[in-house]
Image (cartoon, rainbow, N blue to C red; front, side):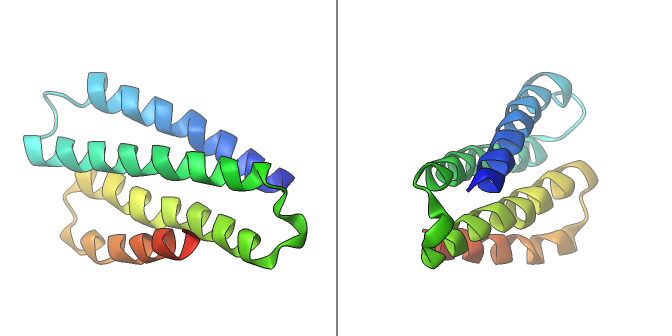
Length: 110
């Protein structure tokens, strides 16, 4: 349980920083579509960070399925949001193939 709370706290810190960076640091550097991609990543990271923290608060220690769900949220954030952040910054199109894997992990977490 403790490691999910720590992962959630780190993700929460990062999502606030990434949201601020996208709103204030990237405007003028990225085109509109890339900024929308960045914003999508921020929104999904925030939703699933809250889900990860909620799962940690349920005391997942003895419940295998809650642990699996929490890991799905954590790795979903990494794959879904991470690939969108890199895609927005780099324009590397093949990263779009990784994003749905993170989406499937989000679905599995729920």
